[in-house]
Each structure stands twice: as C-alpha cells, then as structure tokens.
Image (cartoon, rainbow, N blue to C red; front, side, top):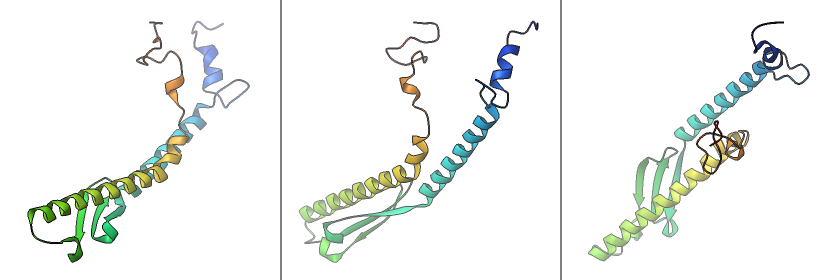
Length: 141
C-alpha cells in the first residue's frame, strides 16, 4: 500500500472516467471551449453597434456594444424653436434615445452571452462556499 493518501483519489479524478471517476481532461477541454465561445461572443458584442431612437426618429443615437456613444443624429423637426425650453427638450430626447440604445445593447448582450452563462453551474446555491452570506465557510463558521 502506498504512503501517499492521494493515490487512491488519483485513479478516480485523473483517469479516463472509469466507474465513479471524473475525466479531468474532458472537463478541462469543455471549460476551454466555453472560454473560447465566451471570448468570441464578447468580441462580437464589442464590434456591434445599435441605434436608439425616440420621437419617431427625431433623435437617433448610435452606441457600440461596449456602451460608447459614437453618433447623434437630430432631424430638423426635433427643434421646435431655439429658446431654452426647446433646447432642454432636445437634451431630454438625446438622453431618452441613449437609454433606448443601451437597452438594445443589453438585449444583444443577453442574446450573445446568455446561452454561455446558462452552461455555467450556479455555485451560489452550494452550501459551504467561503464568503457566501448565511452559509458556513470551509471551516464551518
């Protein structure tokens, strides 16, 4: 019998997935594939642009997938006058168009990244994770 207490575990953890064993190689390969897919989705999101519009297209803004405002288009109909109230209304329209664009970016992120997050285990419900509120840590307190 071996003096190393981990020898008994090595067959079950690092093997080829025998009875009761866990194939770490396959698990690592799956994790690498998920990481590659996540990076690809993040890249696609960063390269994407979306438009947010309000007031029937009177104000349109363009935002990148990372949330950077890149363009603002204002139609002449958006300006009812040149007084302070009309300019304040225009400012409100720009803000509203930006919020619309950001909501679309969030939807796009959910479409691109959501399926990848769905494949990840929810570790928040596992008892005994250190630092989890209301749950004991590794030492039991």
